[in-house]
Length: 334
Image (cartoon, rainbow, N blue to C red; front, side, top):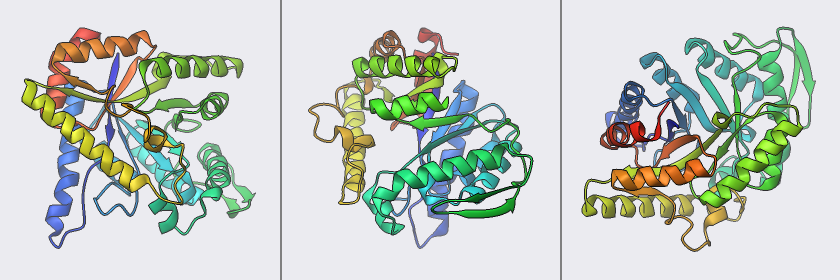
């Protein structure tokens, strides 16, 4: 089983710039230690206008982490394509991939939060067509060694060539966050890797991985279990008090995410909103408990076909050490 990180730094606005910056510096050090402990990757989310300091400039932060690490895969989970100019984004993506010597995993998505659509003054019904157009131009810009032109609904480019080229050719591996049958099938048909959320049950995960595998093979692509990464809240508690505190933190984080996500312009089936009214969905399946309980929970995920787990929500460095020392050796970490 392979392990990575999933989440974000926190750098809320403050009158003291050093206070805001400290959240980023702490996050960077966490990633440096994660690499030393044997974690394979770190996927960072992109969000805007939260007033809690979630990361907005994901590629910038990953570039800093790239300079402090040598092996850690650097993932976006996800870059919300409708917010971005595809040519400018391609230039930034290629620069990071080149500077990291080919360690970028490029996760992309459509966005779902009310406050982001509202903040960018973007109608939610434009999310799909913008995503498709930006993705098309982004892939072409990263892959092409010749000048090209594009005339679309939202963007126009005349005789452009993106510099520098990425190290991973024709482009860094692409990942998509998906949960519905339609979105999983679309991800597979494109030959992209799949990101699955932290709220799905093992039974749901088994069905989704099987669907992805069928669609991937039908489209002529090879299946590898490591092409599917599953986020999961993992915390190794030393006693009942630590377990209770971890559960309380999880509840607080999830309620805050729900609060940020709700709104008239949110896409209701996306991410946490898809589980908002499902009894126990956000409490039953995190792996919080003694090391043995976490190992048992990971075994249940392995039985469902999960081989790649991204730790979400409990990313303290103490917890990363406990998982690395008490859990990963027992599940054959690679």
